[in-house]
Image 1: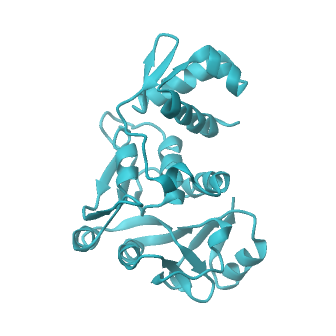
Image 2: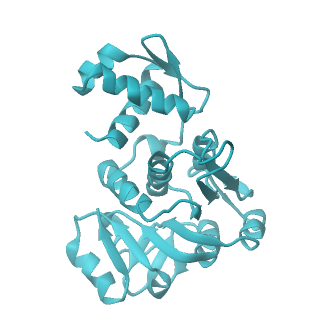
Length: 260
């Protein structure tokens, strides 16, 4: 288990139990107590928990998310996709993220991966998002600048949509955008199940110098209700390794494919 996986595991256990003890967690994860202490110290520095003598307690960050986040399908694949996608981000970038379970993993990986600020109160990366849960989770990270779009919240996805979100997005530019999709077809492009989501996703994608679609293999070769963009607009696809033939079809259309 690498550091990123341990951090996610510790936050998950903390969300369930509200309090952790170093020795018991070290035994549970089969690592040394010193490792767990370093992990908890790091997470405390990111303001994701509060350190106590011998352990940690939950911070005031809200851990509760809609059901789709708690019962996430293809969770391991999405974590791998998140880590691979985060590798495309460099210090100083302005990064766009829409909502969804896969982009949430990308956001977590970016925040975990990036180094601390060079100077006090100076962010390492700027994240522009229409996802309330991503903004909420990363707002406490001192090295991440969060820009939320505004808009009308969708209760099942925590995404902000509508004219207000569109107004903000039209006024900014992004170095890179990571878009989670409802479906991705090599001929028909990227699509979403809701037309409001699709409209905002299309705007977010259009403001970026590089567009990266993040999608597990269950989304490949499928079509959803509302179109986001054509395959020709996609620079990179980050997916898992469970559908190599589908991935090849996107490579044949000029998309760089990363299989995590």
